[in-house]
Image 1: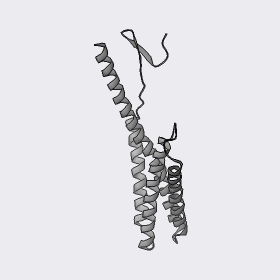
Image 2: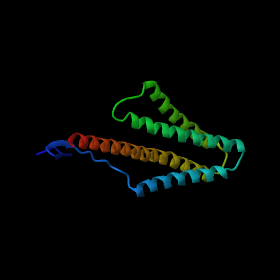
Image 3: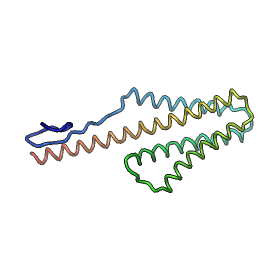
Image 4: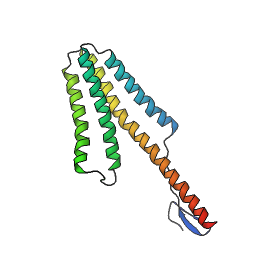
Length: 164
């Protein structure tokens, strides 16, 4: 009797690896959600009433939040099983994310616009940040499954060369 996830070929015990792939439907849903969030933010910021300077600062805040969210998603994923980054880098990544979110939220709260418009901008901004995390995870999962598949193919080729 062999342990789970193993098989025997020509009397040799080989480990098999199960590689999980996201479905095309899930990947499409993630991309469409992210693009919808970007579109909603663009519409909200494009027709933002008030001064052009307010619009410019909000665009910068949204971009700052987006880049900080992607950096945080990568940091969390890289340090999932063991710490590979320095404590100072941890402070920079988490601090950057919180500063981006806090300053953008503060800027949105300070704007002198209709409360309904503020709510639209706030919800679309939070939707953008949340879809950013989902997109980052989906892209990273796809990358890791391609790496695992390539490694498995290489091992199977090497094993067949050794047997043959």
